[in-house]
Image (tube, rainbow, N blue to C red; front, side, top):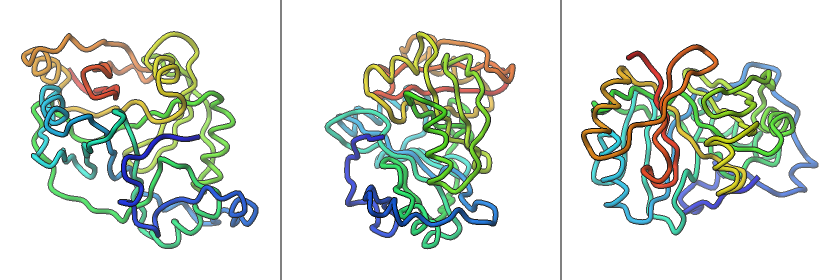
Length: 258
């Protein structure tokens, strides 16, 4: 799997994940102890112009600072100028960065995933009520094969398959603390199918937990955007989606109480 990265040199060498086939043949055995990847630390979104990207995410209701960062409870979003808009990279926090990075490199890696040390900072008060990342979704062509690959690379068990009713996809959800990576194979029309058609395999959606869906919807409407599309998750919760044309190539989802 591949996705363009705006600035690979910005990722420390110790944390970049190899794509060398020779490393694949030298793969380390999976850890016998529990995985220590603790959560999604941050996501990086490519924008054509930083000022325009900041304005777009402020319209969606994020408290984005002038450097393009919006901080949540334990994670953050970063906007970065790039020749291609969209979700560029996902960073997972590890409490054994050197050990986990070495293990993952030896298992071939995944190009758009990186490892970082935990770096929790005070959360912003977002007008849309966002508290934290719930999931980041990754479009794949074969969810069973992708799940087996991710499980091996990340050193965790492969999850069972489930049907995502809002994104209309078969999914494998890897849970890391309060956050998760969701692999999504489209089963019909919807945002997952659109992303796979438009960009190919790779990250396409960030789902956020908010303290108030109605507050998020009102802020979005008051700032000139179309009403978000709504649906019911397979958990029974309501969710709503801001489409990529309003979020610099990323589908932004919200889930939470009314």
